[in-house]
Every structure is written in structure tokens, then in C-alpha cells.
Length: 509
Image (cartoon, rainbow, N blue to C red; front, side, top):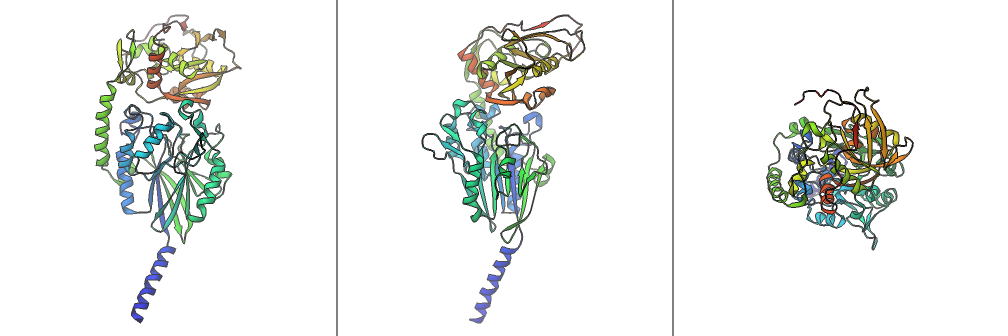
């Protein structure tokens, strides 16, 4: 009897020691993948989902107190996924072994009903505490989940940016409402903090100063969130940032990095937390062999995409050329047609499209999905921004700065005309500019439809970087197909850009 008593006592003591001993909680995280799931994506800068999953699964086998979270903008972006309206992403995410995700603004690009359908197919939850139905005020998704990992209770709640109301096509979210994320966070903290050792807010909010709600603001105006796994602003936070006692982490975008946050917990209290970003070399160091399950699913997804790509989606009256040296230094019919489509969809004052983004000819006759996706292969999303007339002037100067050399940033335009003199030095070439038939006003604010690529300063369009975004629509291929179907081909002839003098053309190949 005494021997049995001491045996029970020793077991209890060992249990208490295990509770009090420091335990390590690891949170791997991704955000803003935009369907970049292959190591060939984004000019081979993407690590690849099979590579990420292999590393995370290896880490989970070594430490069961490990989570893998995604902060949204996942189901939309590249043709391989958008062609199935996000459905092809589901088996890939399931095979990867994610534990939870939240919804980004572009995850609503197929409509809220489609996102609900995708959520039901996932083996893990979409967590979203501030998205509710307008009809009855009920949440669209589960607001939170509590994970029990090696003696640690981890609460995770999700949030979507209220900017989704205009950073997807508004018609996609007519049935839902995005509640104040600060107030909802306070509600979640009140519910979860007493039950959990670690509280994580998984949000698609971002740190852009132009946004009304940011992850930093939520951390400042609340108390009790230990870690914010963030997305939306495509910000590379190498070591994370700290606001009061909250650590905010984000990987940038497009699977360039895998985020890793490490939290040490002792006696149910956090004693330290840190953040780091793992690049492709670090991923291979954990496991050099891509996950075979994902590779198998990816093979199937690619095969199904090939079938869907043959679908006829529009008709073309004429073949329009994307010949490299044409579109990179001259106004082109294809570029004009694309710019017109973007301005039509955005209802903006003007629109632009860079020649380097036009990668295939538009065929005459039936136009298949693969034809349009070949023209726009990069998964660019159409944005609407507000810019001053002075920025438009600087933008056009940059467009013709290098003529007669070819330049991928050479712009075709819609809603405006301008002239330029290539014999003048770069930055002083543009002459008359008209928008809607009226001279450009440098001090007036105009709306412009453009690629997300350019709002990040792509092609060195620094004057567009940080412009106020007032709308986001679908991908270029989706918008272009809609335009051909609903408007057709008209008024795309060249004549919007006038070159005042001729200069010798270099021999380029």
C-alpha cells in the first residue's frame, strides 16, 4: 500500500514538473500566397508549397507543439487556381497540413458564397470573427479555435480587413459586412484570454499607414494579444515588430519566405517570443525533399487546369500582336484594348498597362481561356488608385524615358492622350497631356486603373508607390475576358500617343 502511494506521489510530482518546465511553441506562417504554389512561380522566387510543407511536417514530427497558420489571400492569383474559382487550392492546402487560416480580401474574389463552399471542403477552419451576414448578423465562419499542444492552450481568432468592401469587386461582398476589428478583438480577448496560455490573432490587416485599421492599431488599442500573424500589406517583417507586449509577424508575399515564431511558455506564462523568416536554403536544410503528397496533388491540379484552359471564353475580330519590340517601345492595339478593358471595369478616369506585361498575341476568332492567360500570365490584380495630375505627368515621363530603347514599363493608356519629344533628355520629353479631352491639371486628383505590380513601384514607377487604393477588382485575364464578352472590340486603334520627332532605332533582338 505504501509502495503504491509513493508511486502515485512520484507520478504527480513528475506531472507537475512537466507542467512547470519550459515548453516551446512554434508557429509557422504564410500570407498573401496569391496561389504561388510552385517553385517556378514569381520568376522562381517562390519557394513552393511542397517544399514548405515538407519542412513544416518535419518540424511538427520533432515538436508536437507546432502550428501552421495562413493569413489569407490564398485562393486567388495564378491561373492554375483561379481557373477553378479557388477549388484546386483546397486539396493542396489540405495535403500541406495547415491548422487554420483567415480570409484575405482576394479570397472573396469569387463571391462570399463560393468562399463558404471552399471552407466546407477544407480539413481545417477558416477563422473570421468580424465577417457577418447582413441578413441576420451571424458570423460567416467560426470566430476562433483553441488548440491544446503539449500542455499549452493556444487560442487563435481570425480577422479580415474591412477594406475588403472595396478591395475586391463590391459585388462579391454584397451579402456580408465587416465589423470593426478593434472592437471584435476586444470581444475575442475577453472570451479567450481566461482560457488560454497563448493568444494569437490571425489577421489579414496589414501595416500600411494608408489603412484605417492596421495590425499595429489593433495591438495599440487592445491588451492581451501575444502574437499577431498578419498579411495584406505584403510587408517583409524580418524579426517582426513589437507594439506594447504584442509581436506582429508577416512574411511579405508569394511564398518568398516561411515565417517562424517561437514562444517559450513556462508555468502557463510566456517567458520569451521571437520571430524569423526562413528562405529557400533554410527550408531545404530542414528537409531537402519536397512533400510527395503535394507533388501528386499538384500533378492532378495541373492536369485539370489544362482541360479548363481550353474553354472558349470570348471572340476576337482581329489578331492583335504582342511582339516584344512593338509593345515595349510603341503604342499597340493590344495594349490599348487592354487599357480600355481596365478603365471600363474600374470606371476610372484613366487606365494604363505596361508593354512588358503583354506576353502573347490575341488570336482572331474563338479565344480560349489559355489564350488570355498567356497574354497576362503573371496573375496581376487590377487596382484603382487616386493620384495627382503631377504624378501622372511623372509616370508618362518615365514611360518614354528610354525610347528608342525597348522598356518593359512602356505604357499604353486609356482615357488620356499625350505627346512626347524623344530628342529631349529623359524626364523632360512629355508635352501636351489631355484627360477626358481636357488639359491635365497637376493639382487635380484623378482615378487610375493599374496593376497591383505598379502600385508597389514595379518597373521603377516610384511615383505610383503608396498611392491611395480605392478599389480592387479581379485578375487581368478575368477583366479582359469580361470586356470582350460584354463590350467587344472597338476604338482600340493607335493614336493616343504622339511622337513629335523621330530618332534612330537601335538594332535590338
